[in-house]
Image (tube, rainbow, N blue to C red; front, side, top):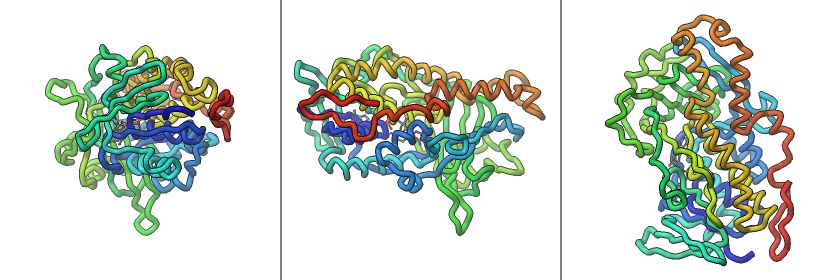
Length: 434
Ligand SMILES: Cc1cc2nc3c(=O)[nH]c(=O)nc-3n(C[C@H](O)[C@H](O)[C@H](O)COP(=O)(O)OP(=O)(O)OC[C@H]3O[C@@H](n4cnc5c(N)ncnc54)[C@H](O)[C@@H]3O)c2cc1C
């Protein structure tokens, strides 16, 4: 097979790539900057298109059930507590694969452990930060800074930059890229043990476009107590953004530092301030993304996941898209062989459409219905049909799902991204992907 593929970054995207390469018979090594793999983060959603790919990678429903639970409903509720929109999700909406709401960190560790079990402990290197690359006729040379203060040069056939929103690979590939983009929204994230509401596994967007809560469980209820781990995001768009640091990520803060902004979110079916106070800690993040770039490829180097398309989390799509990137790239290696042509085909397939999703999420993504309610009635209504007719609401959501790649009928009918058993065979022409 020649040199290994080098993956910079062992997040969800880099590990989905590593598992895919391992599956199709391509040697790889993951260099991950952190010294220790810890279950960091709170809730994320895995859309059915990503769950399909995980299932094809042998990540079973039983494994996912240990780190989350299938989502059953997605709903938007106005600040007055009245429903704006709701739809079934996952298998209850007729998808062949469930949508999962998972604890990001536990899911991440599941991928890491699975990869090391399959590829061997030396295939994942912690405390190893890729700082740059160069290319020659034979392949790529990545520079790696190690936690012990040494640096090494690592030769590979390809370099995959899966190193997140602050990607060093992207910065080298696009030295003139603009700084991180922040639209002024701040998020406080946390989890609280509480009784799940509505279906028991509902994703709820509650409030207005600029002042809202997102709430969903990431565990089934404990049979003894009825309490589940509820993931929440309290969100506020600031008018004055001058004093905020926009590159901070997961800064722990006291609940008291922001709970007063949500005292109005109190209903007979949900007491948001009580739920927030039930958490031990909250993490403050600015909602940031990056302007799209014209290409994710430079010769034998390609970007994926947040390094390629960091997006606002309004569509619950960042981790799902990172997984899909890995699979499309894997399919491209099967079709074109392990070289720059495969990266070009991957780039041609995804960079344009996914960049559109990045921009769409700035316009509030599926939460755009909240903007419409705000614009049309100032957020006050008795019956949502008088504000946005049902057909218009459904049409709005269908367009988002099609753009984000999880339109149900298209997904259900699609052939696997990588046909079972496909391998890039040594010394032979690659086998075609489905
Ligand atoms: C600690 C953390 C917590 C998160 N929590 C949430 C959450 O609660 N909810 C949510 O919706 N999203 C969260 N996210 C983001 C979400 O995981 C990503 O948007 C999505 O999974 C896409 O993943 P990715 O692998 O492309 O990027 P990331 O998840 O950012 O992973 C990138 C990985 O690369 C490593 N890395 C960075 N630079 C280098 C380098 N130069 N060389 C080698 N390794 C490098 C990082 O340590 C990281 O492990 C979190 C991300 C991180 C890193």
